Image (cartoon, rainbow, N blue to C red; front, side, top):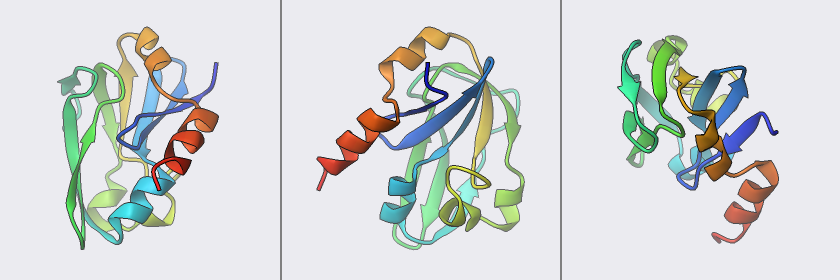
Length: 125
């Protein structure tokens, strides 16, 4: 089982046990341009898979971020409040947006692994 999965909307979820760390992919941050603001969800909020969880705003556009799986927000990346550019600098590392307690790990099977996601974005252009 892979430990990182991607959605067709370019969110990633890095899974450790029953916790997923969620953010946007390298491809997504390149498409957005310079990120200037991240609206973080609230700790304790519950979301179903594909629910809008937060918004990332760039100089070009505001983009909704969707829950890759159902679960409860257990942590948000407070560093993004002062340094939203972390999303550009290290989207799949320090630029993570929130952590979610996964309610149903079978939902992961509907997401793409790294190779499938790479094939997907290669076919977008």
